[in-house]
Image (cartoon, rainbow, N blue to C red):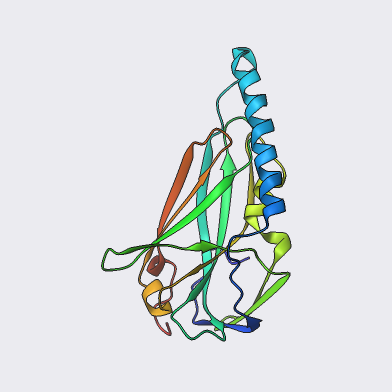
Length: 200
């Protein structure tokens, strides 16, 4: 995982562009079951104040990103492999409904599409090869098991956006997620703050 690493001019190697139209219904059904169960548990806890120190309290950090152009595309589409840490200072909760908004330098906003991480995605860049695996997919990790009080999870979120890479490199990312109660938390990152401008 890249932490506070400079972004490189990254091109997807050997992987065809395959954006899921909206993904894995079985996993989403499991997520909904977990949300319902945890919501019931939270309601019970609310009925017993001595057991409820606080509601879920998520904190987001964007640690770095790989921004790349997928193979075999004829339109301006850019991939964003976002390295993220989520911490929880409240009661245990899963994380759901990840959303990334890309704000271009002209103020125009675009919703990026969250996509299932393939078994292995290899990117070639200035700093060498970077491998991204489905076992490090944060949207899966953060709802398979509730994030416990005082604990955190790190992983990768894979998005695609219909914006040229050159514009994405000048943009601002606004990432948000919800806890089991539906409360949303967010973090904002100006992409150029990550970058070693020379060579990009």
